[in-house]
Length: 269
View 1 (cartoon, rainbow, N blue to C red):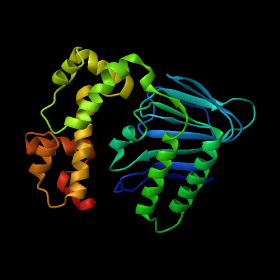
View 2 (cartoon, one colour; view 1 turned 120 degrees about the horizontal axis):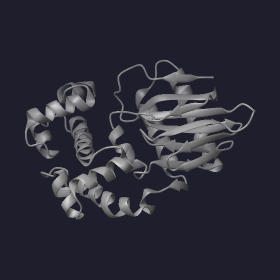
View 3 (tube, helix red, strand yellow; view 1 turned 135 degrees about the vertical axis):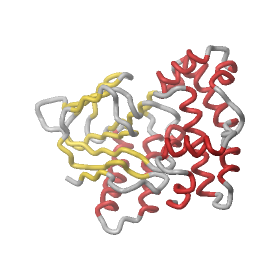
């Protein structure tokens, strides 16, 4: 019953906040959701997962990925025991996970895909159980696991919901293409002809953050990329390229989001 929780600083682009297998699953209730992307898959028995997006019954090798802070609960479906595999994801490139999975809140994985994912989880558990842990190899495996989950055909797609498709998605695309420009919640909302307050409510509903928080998070993720891939680039240049007009403000926001200054982050990586 290997269960592993991360206890060291995050230095890889993608890694596990927790991972485990052969777990005798208890009844879990999370009104505020879980702070990381969280994948749960049945090994033996049957479990039922309740979410805002619906109720999902997980038979053997079937799984579910749940986005951060999505209300959910789960428990075994019968008197027999329910054994699960699970993984939750973090890393220095954690902000890119929504793009990897297509900004979906829930992804259901069928048994065929789940069989492959089960092997990947087992392999990652073995990597973490051996010493010393090869962080780069584990990060590649973690990314591969995310891609396999994202490729599942059993998907609850936000694109099916008109408010997301008509208002939130166009703003996300504008942020992704123009994050270096002086964007604001007001300018972004005007592009889809709604008020800043309503746009932020939609972002909160679908992505669990305000428009401004999403914009800032995306800019920070791009800053992380530049800090690692362009080691000679000055901090003030990175601030400018990622949409922060003032380098001091950039350093303050970066440290608040990441826990270290940009220079400290660069040294760690």
